[in-house]
Image (cartoon, rainbow, N blue to C red; front, side):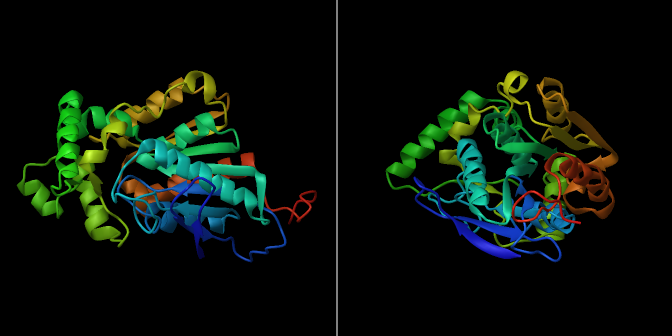
Length: 320
């Protein structure tokens, strides 16, 4: 694995990314690539990298796993901004970078995203036809979630609060950082939280996969753009690439089950597959061996079918 800094024209900061290489990697050959995108509040060292990125690299792909701008090891200010349009731009900038690497075939790049990264990857695929195949794992439309649960179903009131907070910060008051999760599962239960997604997210981020770059937080005063954003807009006409949608059949408050069903139904893709992992939940698919393994059993052949295998440097002869 290699850690790189990516800066494209027009950017004012670097995107940090880990590149996972296949076994026996040969820089003189050309590989299909996958950009693997982490959930909201996560980072490149967690599920997008250490589970799905590593497995796809083992299967023969070069996998690039970026940190979101303003988060993790990537640059950008103010910190902990969650800007959907910037996230989609990040992915397209990473594709620019991937196409510049001599060992990546620029015409065989796929994208994978988990949770909010899944929704962002869907939007990137809608507008960027360089992406040849899409996998969304327990993907969430973050705009829909912001207008519903993350604003207590009062999006206008939340926008008014964000405006007031931004004005206060401009006058010198402290930033307001919203923490997505309680400090522990026990604290969450004691506070009356019963939603499976919140409690299992807490277990994942606080216990199962603690990482320094994982914020699980958001700068409240800069969250307004997400309120008017929609990951699925124009999918009926513009989302034409091969697509696989993966989620568990135990629904929770973040809404991956309903969002997965919605985008599967709406996408114009003629080649689309719905994979429902029975008996498992949103956060089970992050790292638990059985459900993640079931997802990989489907998505690895999917990417191989649409992106192909390693080729010689000329791109003319398939490698054994």
